[in-house]
Image (cartoon, rainbow, N blue to C red; front, top):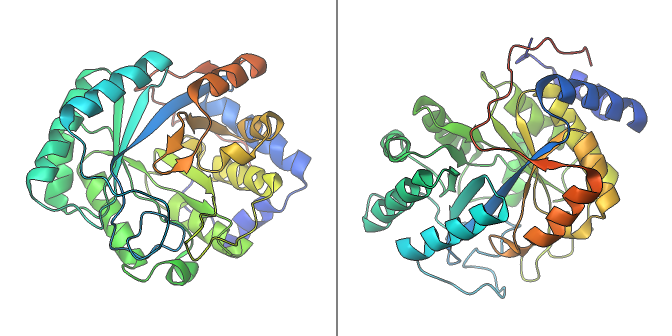
Length: 328
């Protein structure tokens, strides 16, 4: 059965297994809950770019950093629906819309986002939003508009969080996730590795996520993309086997969740991505950008799918959450 009582020591033991054994265990569990040859293709669109008042050390959209991000106001509804039609035709089954806000405000911009959600939902795509902090009432409005999922990453462990963000605290993140869950919206929450955190911090984040009951339906694993002008611009790139270990541990801890191979794929070979899929990743973001950072385009990813014998996952597919898991 699915577990919400993992200990940090257990997850550390899993993470540090010999890589071949770790891959085997993760792949075995993955096959019990998911089609191993099926990967969801998602698209991430920045509907409001830059000018964010937060100080997240990794983010080029923070107003206080000097980056090459150009500030853009909230998109018009017609432009968003046009983009949605393009990504659906390209093979995506989920569209995530991101706005560089600290929190959602009850104003005309939020009303426009609700319209966007309604229209994209009516096109047969899973609709995900990442808009910053939410109140319970705002989560309910998004749910009523047809929002399928809400992304709000924990980023790292509670202990390391204060090293990278000072404009909000960890509890703020957990509160928003609680509002999302209570509203009946699918929870999407993960983090970033390569920010200078320890392995214990990475496992601490997975421990927090895997202790949620139910687990988040979606767990993005991002490799930091260092951006000039941000405090983390000089961080070394994440080794592919660190990504593999992180994805495999997430898969073992949260077997039914969709584990998303997210930022950092432009620095990965097809072979490296194949290892991530074997370890349990079963979603990618396709399209030339992830908000403001580079990302492989649809054609490149479809060619990779062809080489690896992968197929795109249909929207609104729910994994079997009653499967008996193999002991890790």
